[in-house]
Image 1 (cartoon, helix red, strand yellow):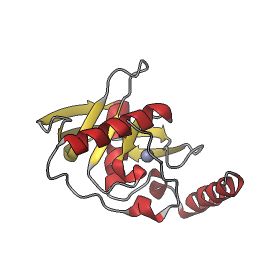
Image 2 (tube, helix red, strand yellow; image 1 turned 45 degrees about the horizontal axis):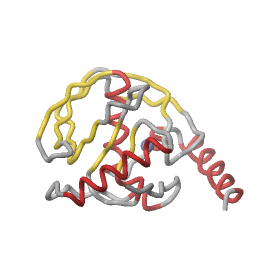
Image 3 (cartoon, rainbow, N blue to C red; image 1 turned 45 degrees about the vertical axis):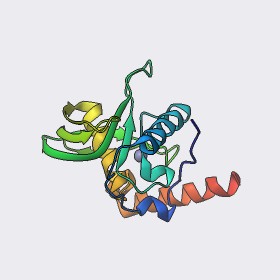
Image 4 (cartoon, helix red, strand yellow; image 1 turned 90 degrees about the vertical axis):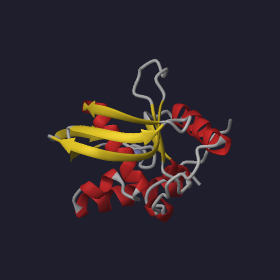
Length: 167
Ligand code: ZN
């Protein structure tokens, strides 16, 4: 297991589109395990492969307080969405920034698990928001993209300032 380096906005590599995983093999499982370790260490509740500069459709999540409910989505696809939910979101790639985003309130996602087995999951609340946030990453999309141009520019300037101070 190894900790992976998390890319920070506005790194252009966060805009890469992830490709479907062709085979869930030991290499993929190793990557999934490293992603969980990196997410727990950060700490965060979700991490997409795009954020660790791997252009493959893999997401890991754990919304439990005890950090004992790992959820891995490989090649996730939202097959239905309904309602709306507004929540304050943060992101490991945009540290220190929390903004309210409007998304679907309920989503059903279809994916492969860590063993390559297909499953379907109905979600609402934080889980539904997290699934949409992470799948966005696989499309090269960030939660700050939902903000106004003015707000996003402010976030970018703040991130660039932080970077200068943490070389
Ligand atoms: Zn994120």
